[in-house]
Image (cartoon, rainbow, N blue to C red; front, side, top):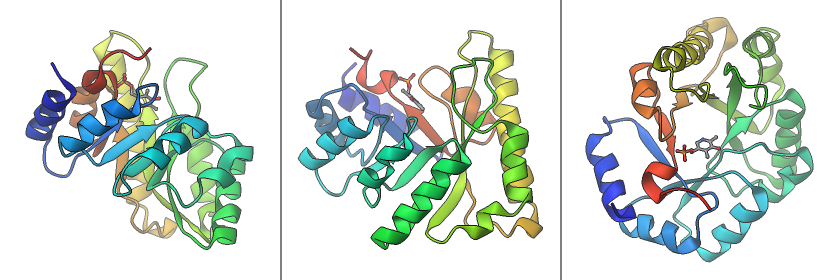
Amino acid sequence: MSITENIKIFKDILPQGVELVAVSKFHPVSYILEAYNAGQRLFGESRVQEFLEKQKELPTDIQWHFIGHLQTNKVKSIIGKTALIESVDSEKLINIIDSESQKTGVVTNVLMQVHVAAEETKFGFYPQELLDYFYMGKHKNLKATHIAGIMGMATNTDDTAKIASDFKSISDIFHKLRNDCNLQLIGFDKLSMGMSGDWEIALKYGANIIRVGSAIFGTRQ
Ligand SMILES: *Cc1c(COP(=O)(O)O)cnc(C)c1O
């Protein structure tokens, strides 16, 4: 199956209101252009240097989601260049995003990454840590950062029951925050979950952004 065919298939099967991020990390610019020519405009990258190099070479109407762990010393270089930073995994990081956004005179859209998977290696706020962040009202101090929702990953396993329970946990946190009027969250409506192997399960739990790499572009080098 070609990249063009894969993009067409996803466009056909995804329900209205679900955004497809084509995760192009480790894949060449030529692959991104093929997806672009098939109509795809939303791409995801996970490394700062790679993202910046690709962005320079590609059409300016591409929307870029940054989806990888972002080191605080690299924030400055991507501010103003992303449609959404999906992977805010610490309070320190969001505060630096906020101060750099103020300096640049832009508002940066972000998602808070929550860590529910069994792996130690995944980044993100633990659920209680994320709830505390909001219930302590810390988001109200942000001046140039818009928190648009939550991103999360399920445990990397074949056990679909475990994957489903991870997505349910992420979805529950999202709805708890979203439905709490006291938090005064505005435009908090994005729930990013699901990758090549588990996006169908994620949709059942209300994902409205899925991040798909290998099912579009093939295996990464
Ligand atoms: C690489 C990556 C993806 C895409 O993974 P695939 O299994 O290739 O679809 C999605 N989300 C994040 C955060 C990633 O790092």
